[in-house]
Length: 294
Ligand SMILES: CSC[C@H]1O[C@H](OP(=O)(O)O)[C@H](O)[C@@H]1O
Ligand SMILES: Nc1ncnc2[nH]cnc12
Image (cartoon, rainbow, N blue to C red; front, side):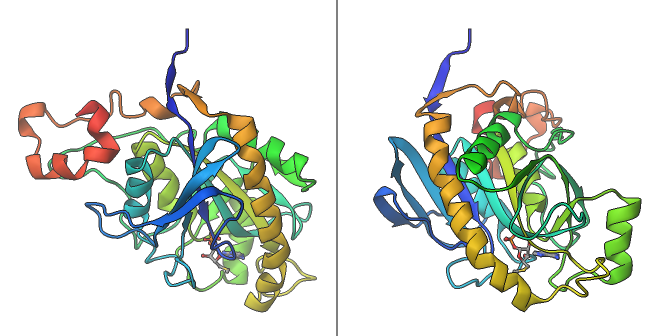
């Protein structure tokens, strides 16, 4: 029988165009310190429909951090540290498919990670761990996002592969065609990696909502991706993103049960370093992320 584990805390990482959410009761911006440095910004905490909520603007209020300099490890550690159980990324993305039009949402379920200038793991020398990211998103949380989107009247597509590029420049036409035709990707963005990998290492359920803003550079009728077009689409998308978030507490509930897909046990057999060889200084940094198994 599945036992109640703890209280649900839904953490939303807001991407480009989403720097706050409204409607939280007892809303407070909290400073959270981590062994990995400062998160992107303070974290807004409160409750919605009786469920604990947290909101972190990925690029910081005022859009301070670039995709390469977002402090991904600090962000995930900070959310875990304050008790988050479920992390939902709400991101601006380009589309590689005619039918995934600007304004539509895609509940992403796979990633191809082409980023190269970011720290990608909490683990390393002194404590080595290998988690599976074969299924990098949580189906239970993705179900809730899909239902919430439909309830908010958003055109939503379930499943899709997200190409994570380093940026900050957009893709060339040749890259865009390669990602779409040869690699079979559906959407493109610059931030969901290593975020999703780190959430798995931290044993957090993770779901990704891609809010389509443009057709990237491959589309013969839309030409090169243009930041002005993206910003124009971001406004309506952000309103829909916030509407989706507001529906989540009622769907997930305040009482947390263990993830049926094992997200909250990802580290169970993952740590390779022999107990007597583990570096105490490294273990101290892993207190929030991996304390359960250390
Ligand atoms: C504003 S266009 C490029 C920028 O937007 C996306 O950010 P996020 O994923 O945080 O919504 C994309 O990944 C790029 O970082
Ligand atoms: N075409 C695109 N490429 C990368 N990131 C994006 N974010 C929004 N549109 C994008």
